[in-house]
Length: 274
Image (cartoon, rainbow, N blue to C red):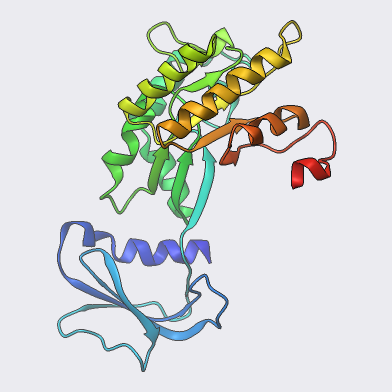
């Protein structure tokens, strides 16, 4: 269905630049609710927006509308991917901390290519039926992606958290002229960083909650709680990378809106679920 959803979006791509009406006819439509699918439905779009959806005998095709026959296809609401990174490739060249291939694939060039050509990720998302994504941490340039693509029919809607507030910063993932991590040192510094992120256009605050062996869990937890308070004051959602039950519980105390990974070290307990 996701691939067929793309077929519909490609058919109406010119709408972003034109004011014509388009009628998509003949498809089976799943509206995302609990109702039965609409067989041989008609979808009318005007100025890039859906203005009517219904069975073929319920919706009138406007005079002069461009008609696109989608018989035999399925149309569904777009999917939402709440964990993407435009400043990673999905391979080792974008994560030398996991596997260092920088000698053959320089990390700075990899990141420069990601910044210069985000459209390759746009295409991958749309071809998978994903029409909205949340970039949950990366270099500062990811903040600009959403506004630059909001009126585009060839890219998903994009929200971005941008640089991560981190309890530990891997130097291998930091370039000399930019950073995708801000090390949390004190409650005051954390609050100032959150305010700066908000002013710069971040759509959320992301915390990378890693507890090094030589660090104090309690002290780092206080910094995460401080990030939660600051995010709430700035009216920004809080996202936390927490893969241990103890760190995930602290994230919940901090008011986290999204845990971007699963708890991996032990089964969750009643306290966590409740």
